[in-house]
Amino acid sequence: MKNSLYIYQNGELKRHDDTLQFITSEGEKRHIPVNSISEIYCFGENTLNTKFINFVAKHEILIHFFNYYSFYTASLIPRKTKIAGKLLVAQVSHYTDEAKRLVLAKAFVLSAGSNIYRNLRYYHGRGKAVSQTMSEIETLVNKIEGCTSIPELMGIEGNIHKCYYKAWHQMINQEIDFQQRVKNPPDNRINTLISFINTLVYTTVLGEIYKTQLDPTVSYLHEPGTSRFSLSLDIAEIFKPLIADRLIFSLLNRNQIQEKHFTKNLEYLHLEENGSKIILAEYDKYLKRTIHHKDLDREVSYRYLIRLECYKLIKHLYGEKTYFPFIMWW
Image (cartoon, rainbow, N blue to C red; front, side, top):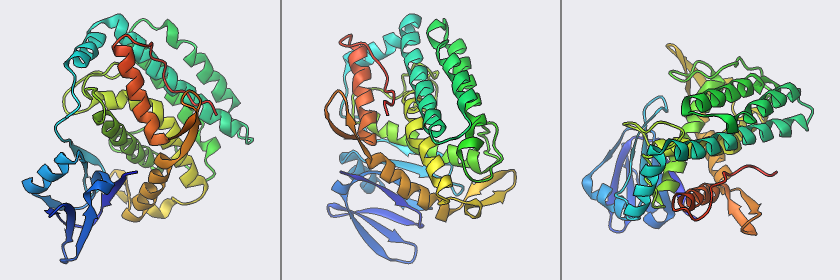
């Protein structure tokens, strides 16, 4: 299995024969086998040239860039080799046809709401006082099918998350000041963690979409726009409860991430490098976790679940099999 490469030090990324080479600002050289890497995350001030870019593009390696404050800024994606004009036409037609678009958008919100409910059910079974929230979210999920427009559906999706976040203090054993989602910029530890880890899920989904024939800019729940891969946002909604939220609960409840891993900077909280390194190590472990897939009757990783979701969407777009989203069964 290929791994993600995380670079925090300042330095230069180069091609050296048939391997990747990273030269730190102190002159230390490290060689990385190109066949072991699926994507590169740059958190430092890194220099790279066209020779390097052409080399990693040939090996279909994505590069994601973050600024000094660990905010995601951009992705460098190789030219797609897996392309299908027929699929692109089908993707676009399912967007332009309001009824077809709504079917898929409902499926994404149904999955997100159902997986959120299962997170609450997990903690309810461990004595946490979340039964009222479970009831509220169940009521909202039952309204999804009756939605007649994307704005109405987005409203329900927003209310599901609003209810969900209000219960987080019940599921997290640390003292937290968190009642609502604040993004730009995140104003406390929980919002900072959500922003950072949701970005990781977004980039992972983008990488899995790249390995298929899907176009990442044509989406159904989120409005396609400039400067973002909106299909990644759609599919990420499915997996954020499973990967991002459960990872946050685990990191905080095991005291792996504490107040000392953050610094106050102007009006927002900055995640320190030592904290983000802990998160990335645990995130990688989460992606490699496996479950026994009921339909495939074999073990699959969390990362591969995302790819399977892309394949299911392709079958729906081609009219081969109606799309039913991933919903946790455990």
